[in-house]
Image 1 (cartoon, helix red, strand yellow):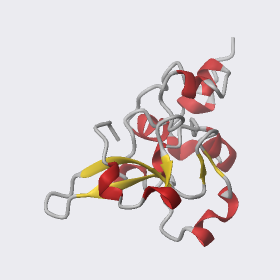
Image 2 (cartoon, rainbow, N blue to C red):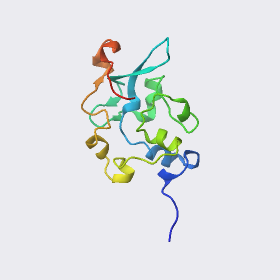
Image 3 (cartoon, rainbow, N blue to C red):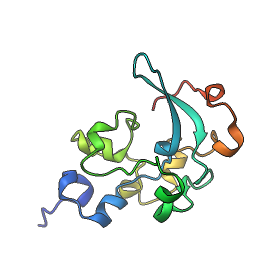
Image 4 (cartoon, one colour):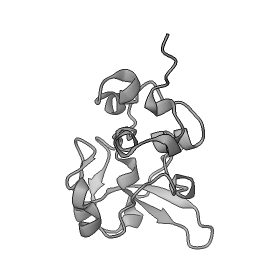
Length: 145
C-alpha cells in the first residue's frame, strides 16, 4: 500500500516550484482590484480585474512577465501567504496554509479545470477589465474576498 500523500495535501513549505504553481485553482480572484479602507485597514472586493487577466479563462495573459507590466502584481510565495489577508477563503494556498483540505471543485480533486467555473468560484461572468471600469469605487461588491 502506498501511503504517499498527493502534493496538494502536503505542507506548503515542502512543495517544489512546479507543485506550488499547480496548486493554483485558476479562479482569478487574486487578480481583482481591492479597495482598502484607510481608517480601518479593511479590504473590500470589486469586480474590476487586472488588465492582464483574461475574463473568460481567469488566467493571466502574460504570467511570465506580469511583474514587468504590472509592478504591484502580487507574487504569492510560500513566505507571504499568511501575510496576504485578502486572499479568498477558497484559495488553495490559503487553505493549505491553514492546514485545510481543498474543495471538491478544485481541479486537482475533480480532474477538471472547468469545475472552478462551474462551481461559481471564479471571476468568469461577473468582472470587468480595469481598462473599461473607470472609478473603482463604483465597482465595490458585496462578495467575500
